[in-house]
Amino acid sequence: MSENDSESSGWIGAAWDTVKETAGTVAEVAENEVVGVGETVYHAGAGVYDAATGDWDGAANQAGDMANSALNVATFGAVGAAEAGWDAETAGERAAGASDSESPTSEEERHGALKRAGEWIGDEVYDLVHGSDSDN
Image 1 (cartoon, rainbow, N blue to C red):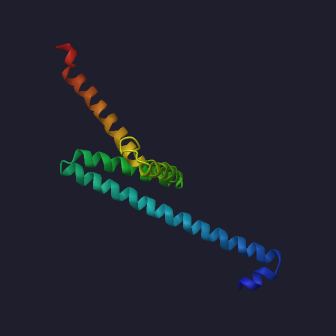
Image 2 (spheres, one colour):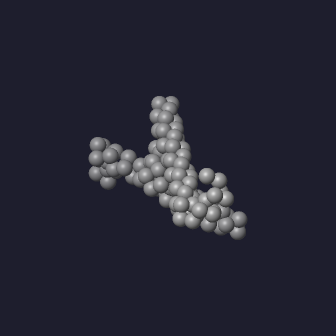
Image 3 (tube, rainbow, N blue to C red):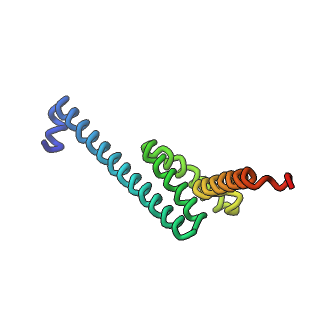
């Protein structure tokens, strides 16, 4: 069925156009999900490599990126869209003269928050095992 046929055949043409549009949308969503799963797997492997070679900060960053990629897949790109909005605003602020610390990207903010959380957990476990400095 050509495009001219669908335009001239009324409701059948409209139904056919809807089928074509839906198929295109489904294919696009599927492609995005495959890419997202690939990113998740990549970050998992890179995190294991970083941990095996003693790069703990790199492993932590990869673990955070892996979780972020998985969350983006699970939300059909909503997380990525929110990050893109955040990063666009950050770009504008930095272009206007804001420093990196005054206007972090979504990735910088996420990595910083995860690092602070990891350090806090590490300190708490250390204190649990060894006693806190105030116990001495």
